[in-house]
Image 1: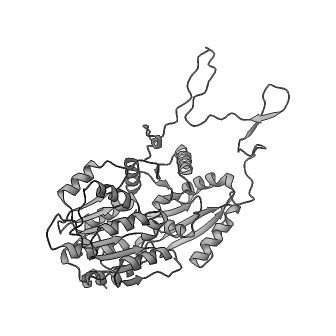
Image 2: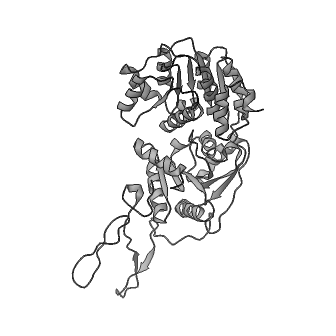
Image 3: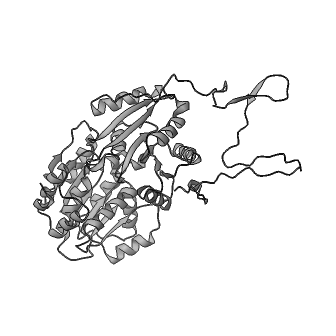
Length: 442
């Protein structure tokens, strides 16, 4: 089937062709005709299968006629990055229709968003918290709203937004078309769908087991906790030589890992919730435009972030929630491509591995990397296990040992020059810290 057979306006099909697409994905082929008919819909498909186009294209088709500048469609997303991405998608594929759209989300000032709302928009993409703020300021008028779309509904549940979503739904017209899209369908989302949708059609193209996208080659790499960082550097330098997305469990861990990779000469982007919106935007831009080959991120990048050409996803830390594993590795092998998902697993990760394999319904290949597998020789460590190397005392005559002195990142050390002066050690500069560097990273 071709996009020309789905009942879309020729100007929308033209924009789709301009982007190089001719054939819809299964979720698009099933959902678009039903949405054009005006049906409420529940769409469930694994990440990377084209859910955004499945609701955005028929939405543009519906709004192509009628008055401009009235808020006729609202799309709710769980994260800023996904809001930006959906808004950009709407602009690209609606460029021949001259409709107005805007994205509002937290982490930035209210001024530009208020200006866009005052000028009038046809389609508004928003995160729940910031939308409620604008509603409280009287900046949003829902009287002309025709369509409500919840994107990544299960992620909104995970992030605690369902209560905010219910408040928003109470403020919008009851007579509307409602579309709910998600990668998984937990019980609470199914209950919500029964409350807010009217006689919906259900479109599900992925098995309920939440299988990873086809084309993803998965592998578990056993390693001890002490050697995980070195194994990641080895992979980046010898195996994962394309665009690589690395997931950590914590924001602090992402920062530390980024610094380690930068010191080894790699361009690194960092993405997590403690970064300002400007920093997050620059990081994504650098990664998309390949100025940074590696992005280190928390699960904020596990949903909705669509970057072409990611060849490797590395789980430096396994996620605590098995479903997040599927979302993470879905960042590669998108739109029919292939990619690799590598997970660094320690002996204490056995329970998490079992939960992931139970979810996806198959075992994942175990692959040992030479010199890094559990049981391989590692550099000598101190009795306290802090990873310091030892060196012999010089000139003491005792033959004892003490930890070798190691300068910490970005500090200065004294050097005896014979003149009594103290010289600074060479500065370590890092684009991640915002300073100028020949290896500037975002």
